[in-house]
Image (cartoon, rainbow, N blue to C red; front, top):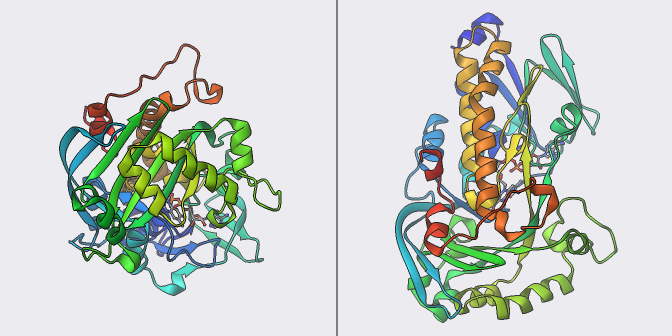
Length: 411
Ligand SMILES: Cc1cc2nc3c(=O)[nH]c(=O)nc-3n(C[C@H](O)[C@H](O)[C@H](O)COP(=O)(O)OP(=O)(O)OC[C@H]3O[C@@H](n4cnc5c(N)ncnc54)[C@H](O)[C@@H]3O)c2cc1C
């Protein structure tokens, strides 16, 4: 039993807002630290969504901490990275062992350890009231809940953050990432298994493409049933982004658009550009992808992680560009730091101070690293540049070494 739980006599209660990876990690880690936890998720359920996730040792450590022993069913092991030139020739190789999994796989592993009664869907938080020794949350369905702590795991558009720290907003980076999944069997039939089994990279001056294998539908890891995940980063200015975020009815969506609402002409433009901008292997990947979608790239950098009895974690706190490949790992590390700080503290308030101290600087560093990796893609994008700042295009070797790698943290 933690020192915090002794201090407040009964088991303290945490309201976890957001039921994605960060929220599930939070619920499980705090429970291990002696808390009662309830997750409140806005949607009706998140099963069956998402694409690829790169794992890191720190993520595996966090999984063990919350009671999950990662095994061979976690994902697809990849040992080699390869960079291609415009004609598809291999121009660089690098040994880099890493397991690549899918958002769906991680979600199902973590969700399995949370009882349905503690995971309430269709709860859209709309207000937070800071109390002297606790917090009250209100939801659009009329429900009000009170706890000793509220964990904001509600993602990059966090309602909690916008209520408590309205000055912190996602800042558009000037480019988007087109993403999608292709069936292994079809891809291997066209390109052979040597391409599918590796982390692939294609670099050109104004864009970059990364791809890797992940589990198939229903987390199927059998050869032939897996899928290939890609992210193609392309510069898109603010006016064009607004067009891309406009659906067929003319509605402009803020920040991102649900994949089914992306207009046919946007998809057609992306597909035709791929035919002359990508190397042959990645052209084939795009041709075979039934439902590509795009994600505008944003930076989110919070100045505080704690206000009263509210703690921001995961994407609600900081969002680094996906080149870092660490959104899930960072969320897991935030949660571990929070649970351990609370567990070791004499009272909740001082535990929260310790949490903020532990994670504020690393959050800033990871966002800065993401800007360094992708900044050259939109050099003139005023919102993300400080005067005099420049970003160099990486060499293929640096691109392979630094993408989806946390080596910079120990450099
Ligand atoms: C469905 C889904 C699929 C994803 N797929 C991928 C992927 O394939 N690859 C990748 O790199 N990253 C993916 N992500 C993002 C990835 O999960 C995060 O970058 C990282 O794990 C940190 O997660 P998070 O839990 O902090 O935030 P998120 O994963 O963004 O989750 C935030 C959660 O909060 C909920 N929420 C938001 N507002 C409210 C509110 N007012 N009240 C209650 N709940 C609210 C959202 O519905 C969501 O479930 C996905 C996220 C989601 C939600």
